Image 1 (cartoon, rainbow, N blue to C red):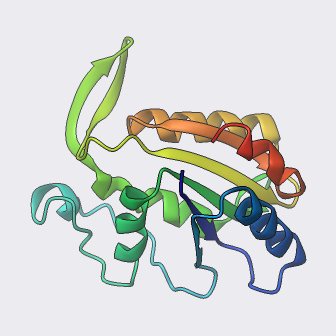
Image 2 (cartoon, rainbow, N blue to C red):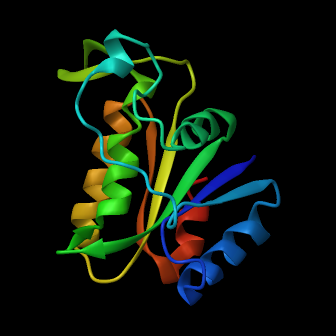
Length: 169
């Protein structure tokens, strides 16, 4: 088992540091990408990742590192802030930009439309959030994100409960 930890909180955030320590101790084969300082631009909806350069985002801002890492690790856990009772803009951008891992084609799975995954890799995604948010809503959101990409949600938990996401890995 190996784990990708995508830290979207400031590097000196004590809750993020504690969560990374907890996750790292439980999964020695892990990698941390500190993405807070990276300037990932939002998805422009240009569909180039589907139509022009399949699987490759037209925006060149370093996000490719994350796309490749998702495919190299058994699971990914995001450490993110909150805003307005939901994930903050950094987390939303990171999830929106994951689209190159899917194709533009849609198929019906259990009576619902889903993107056909570009790769056979089943993404396993979890969220540890810092701040005030509706945990049930975030959990449902993570389930839907993973489901639409043909993956599996590891759940959504307050960052202080980092051990909870480990139960799903």
